[in-house]
Image (tube, rainbow, N blue to C red; front, side):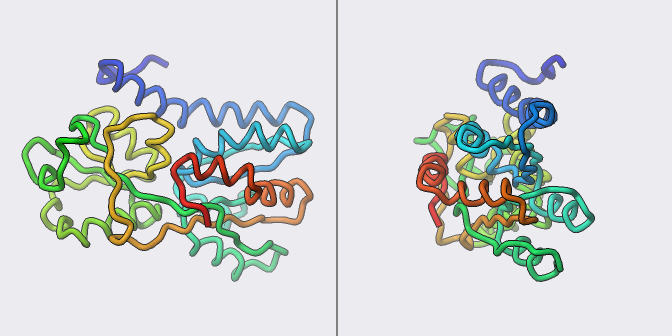
Amino acid sequence: MAAPSFCKGYRKLQFCILGFVILFVYPALAKSSEQDGRGQVKVAVASNFLATLKLLQPVFEAQANASLVISAGSTGKLYSQIIHGAPYDVFLAADSARPQRLKQRSQRPFASPFTYAVGRLAIFHPEIPVEQFSLEKLTTEQIRFVALANPKTAPYGVAATQWLQANDLHHRLKTKLVTGENVGQVLQFVSTGNAQIGLVSLSLLKHLRNTDYTLVSELDYQPIKQQGIGLNQNPTTLAFTTFLLSLEAQQIIQASGYHLP
């Protein structure tokens, strides 16, 4: 598939490639893994953690006789799929509420939810150098649109809304706010120039290796405790959830921009 005409210049092309990988390449890789004859762990993962999970994947697969089959999306959308019968083995959410709900509502032998990472929110502003960025710039004509994830389905959208309200920006930017289904889509909005500012997870920007972002104060939003839950008692499921809390996995998670639980 050819890149869209608005993907001009090296930086924007880099962002667009990342977007295409998230949307098209990862699902194809997941499908192909079904043919390798090994055991499988089907993982439903929140979009913010997708790139980190791809770093963890070869480490886990080298240790276990199993491959990961990955499906990414907003936490709310994945939760809805699970309660309607989607055959996932593990759910890695971007919040703690939905894994807890699964534990409470299901009569199946779910394991207990566990916190595998604590997320961090950042302001992505690729058209404004770090040293020139300020919150007041958000209200200027230079910024036409500010993108955030949908707070109804994405915990990072909830955090972004809390941050906007804490800084008296929500009503001032009301006409500029646009929402994506998840932080991956927010990143696409900014990478294609359809928004100048994006409120996204720090981890996405770490993997992008771009320095044009600003961390926001963690005092301005509730901690983003990302919890996972095993959805069955298969040995491969237990192996993967155990691996996520191992020292090796946690070091990778921390290097990807998360706080450790």
